[in-house]
Length: 465
Image (cartoon, rainbow, N blue to C red):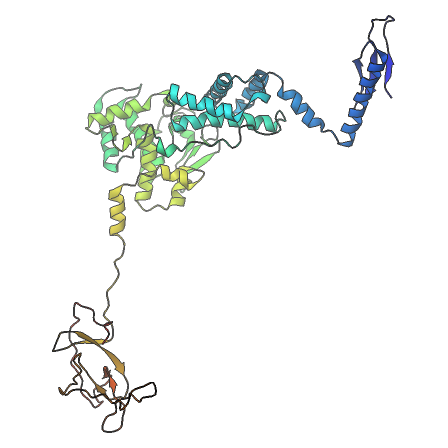
């Protein structure tokens, strides 16, 4: 039972009341100057405490409702702290995208986040900033990550933007990439070595080594930048290169096999380097596309064609995966070497053109043609083909289309009457049944046999007569 009292005597002094909440903790709240109203407020609090205790009121939902009304900036700061385990670039991009949506839509609290408002803002952003479908999806993904985090931390009961569809990125490719051929890769490497120029801080030989390692391993730029002599195990079978989880895109430690010829080159490249020394210092922050563009143009290879651009990622990783598939590697094997989550992502890196398709079709085995076991004869009169079925010990008679037999006589209808029950079998003089159109299977069977001829171009085997 709640206790009601005043701290100071006086007509205008409010009453205070004490009660126990659903956790059993004693709470004191301010009432009214009227004792009756204060008793009603105290009774209400006690009733709510009993309902929470019995489960009729969900205390967690009440806490979520109160949290949703708090300023959204508090939750954004907490979310940014939660992303600290990721790279600084990821944190910066994610938070900038979330804040831009929040500010653009005017969301002051979590309760104000509305799916329709988000969709309207992103559509307007496509027009004002001319962002592509892929960037649109990145904005939506960033806000979706924030909302899912709010649900997991009990700040929201459900994701308010769940169900918003992503755009089809296949119909709006802003920077399509193309894979190089092995000949173009060779020219790119030779161009770098013979240039005598320093581009983005790297000499021609250093750039050539970067191109070779990128093409023969398929590693990304940041992964290549993390490599040290400690990353390679060249004295085991098979030799491998290891990318640590902190430098891998999917945050897992990757161990990949090395090409035998690359192992020979690495033995020379790593000589004299300390175990922790980077092979290509500062590669992660260099503009590698400029290196590739200048080295390609030096040997007359276009950087951008109708198929797409040949930047560093395309000349290395895209070409690596494409050449794996061109040279007989199965799609599951290519997926594992590329370290993709599914084969659909691997197929985005596979640039299989019409020449590759024509080569695959040319390798398709052609069917073998075989003649039928039945012999084919040509009629002397009209050149029609007659199929000769193999028979047993039965005399045969060959009949042409005009109704004459082999002796040139007109064949007589054996039927003496008409109707359903008429006997229509043709009998020989010996009383044996003659089967029209059948040729004896062996030479010792009496009766006339036609000589087999070559197959006529017109297939009359199925012709009715």
